[in-house]
Image 1 (tube, rainbow, N blue to C red):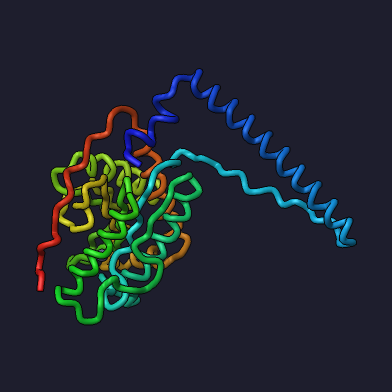
Image 2 (tube, rainbow, N blue to C red):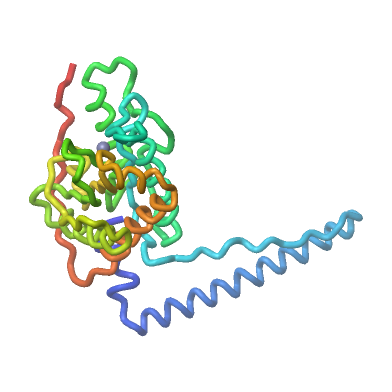
Length: 279
Ligand SMILES: [Zn+2]
């Protein structure tokens, strides 16, 4: 679904439209309840006839539309498999594990807000073959891109952990595609939420960057949750409660972005990388 479409039902609709829509939902809900009750009664009549105990009808879970309803969000856990990414300076923990954990937590939170989530990986794997005809990393990225594109993503969030030669660097850092206003808007909302929720000592600003995952033609952000090269921040990132808060910050950033008033800038068109390193 295109962004202009998914916003329409709840932002552009007049209050009269909303009242009508709400009344429609109530009518549908009451009709559904009646149908469920009737079906339950019929079932129990059959059960009694057959001499079986009565069945208690289990009501279907009520779908909660949520503020992110209609939005398809790609959540990409960086690295995986042979590619561990950055390494915790004290613990030796590879970034790939922490990325996946935060990505899964983020996906769960976004789903409770009504979003449909597409994940590039849900386990510790690289998305490339053992001996591909192109660079393994490039094939891995091309396959992530294919999952995101074929999944119809309206938004891309790539989850990573940072590292730097200087051990004092710390603080979450969000990147967007250089020169892409749509990515910049998203990254700004995410960066602000990371600062508000995680209260890092170093409060960074979102930065333009050159990353493959940000060039797929949809608003995209790469979230570096913190520095594994910083002893204090590594300890925080190894704590599951802190990772949950990081996921909450990311979900909060998406909610803030979704609630921004006005027209969204269009993302830059996708970069065609199909010809890269063929053969
Ligand atoms: Zn990384």
